[in-house]
Image 1: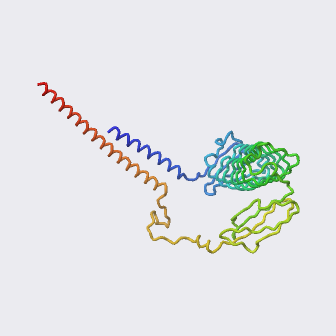
Image 2: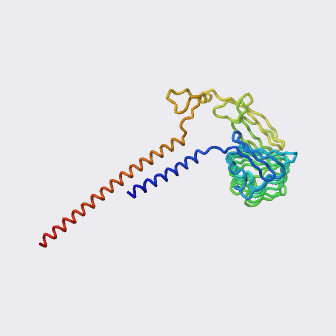
Length: 378
């Protein structure tokens, strides 16, 4: 029977671990939160998934990614607002300030910010649009490392210093333009930027560390002059929603002309403008095309008809609460474990009975042997 209780204890432990796992898997988004950190105030709103930083001067630095006061909600932040008060602009973004905000999609820093610290926006994996102010002078070490969704980036002319690994592991980055004069590109600046196709900058007197382009799509020989123009193609639907973007469709030398043709997009028909002629003047060129969705595609997006089968849940207010996936998993796990316990107990009891029977047989044979031995002696 001791083994029976051991099986039950083990099964209960398994149930508790699975319950914990399912609970974590169905964890809800971070709740509203707020606080103070040195010279800034911060607040997070669950409904808009927005983190607002209010104050002035420097957004404080942290020793590491776990030392920021908003660490518990950083995985839920999709929007970041930096708001100044009393006409005192923010001057810098501290080390690790917004590290690992994996849901953050866009970044626009206000005028007045002059430096971005070490790992400030590192591993913001969903970040695909970055707008830097013209006051910025310094991009710190690993500032945007691991921002694997950004496609194109323009660094303002005010920037003169770029730290090591600043854009390392930005795997989707295709084009980056430095408008100003950066004298040195250091170690692993573009490490593993495997899709990097074009780097535009003032190449006069620039030195490149041997590891700057390690694992990148280009090397120092692929750096182009600022006199070139990059043609980007943006495709939108009739409501202005972006369908497709090609940030480096064509590279043109100064004065060169080129006719941009609207790309074919499955399920869509291009509008009246199907092409546009452009001329390189040393600035980025963006060509937009508008598309309408095909009727067959619209039919597939039509709402599905109501089913006649009964729906589980409280429908008293027209709302289907239903059974959540986590609950279903828990029920299945519970049933499986209970069945396992029952089978284990049955097999254990059967084994106990067999052991008892074998023990009795042995004793019986032994008694018979002893009895026969005694008779022989007589």
